[in-house]
Amino acid sequence: MLFLITIISNAQTLSGKVIDAQTQLPLETVSVYFDNTTIGTTTDENGIFSIDYTDAVQSTLVISYLGFEKVFIVDYRSQQNITILLKEAINELDEVVIDADDGMPRALKLKWFRKEFLGKSKYGKSCKILNEKDLKFRYNKRNRTLIAWSNKSIIVKNKSLQYEISFDIIDFEIVIGSFNARSVTYTGTSFYKDLNASGKKRILKNRKDVYDGSIQHFMRALYNKQLEEQGYIFGKDGFKVDPYDFFTIDNINKYGYRIVALKEKLDIYYKNDTESVIQTSVTEFKVDKSGNYTPIPDVLFGGEMGSQRVGDSLPLDYGLKG
Image (tube, rainbow, N blue to C red; front, top):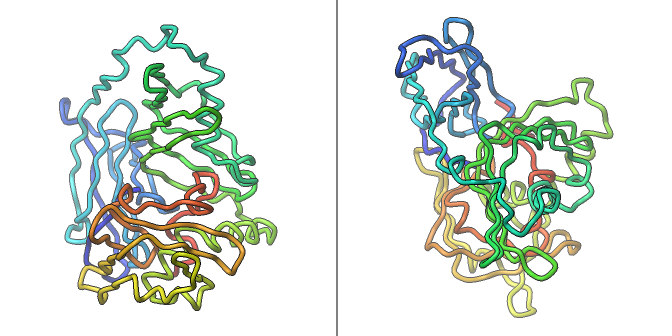
């Protein structure tokens, strides 16, 4: 998930053209989308695209095309018509011999990847990766580390939430323990296609179930200073505490986000049901109203929130209007 710092404005349309940097020819069917949302489009035969946006989601614009380096644009609000040059991608990992015997069969690598990428919840288990053949792996026996990558977007169908997710892996690493993963780190960009066109109540209920108590829900509550109102209780050394004795939350700045500081590690309970932990390795982090926050690797969650994966995720524009 990439974070955007930008000025909030009214509904606008961004138009542009995508061309091959070497040949100067237009590129057709290039994906153009706001990261981790349902808002996206593709270029036409002339390389032209047009995409609408509002201030509901502040998210990086991603331009993605197979065989070319991705382009990320954060200052699109200051532009109306842009030309984007795509350069051919060179993947150094592909130069590594990936078919050699590294001590772990591909079937086991896939099993680890599915579990730690999709998640172990009922929603994660309802997911299916539609193009597993495009996944590539490398296992290091000495430090028991499994990395994964793909030159193509990984397509995930979430049956229970009725989203089709196109996920472009930037980094993916599992450090494997005796029986479970000791640590999991992954980053990437994603686009959500909503498959629930008829608005089935069962699917909407599932989405609400996933949202409540999620990191996204928590970050929105933090941004709006409604932690307790949204059902969160905090503890320290076995005692209930006032979260605002530990969180310092600045006013919303002109860019539409808050700067937040956490003094020390806190236990989080959601409606006295699920237990999580939050701590940071930085003095402060940023959060916007959609629940997007940065730097992601330095805001650490354990427990229930720490176990959430792609199968438990919702787009950043979920539940937001205008």
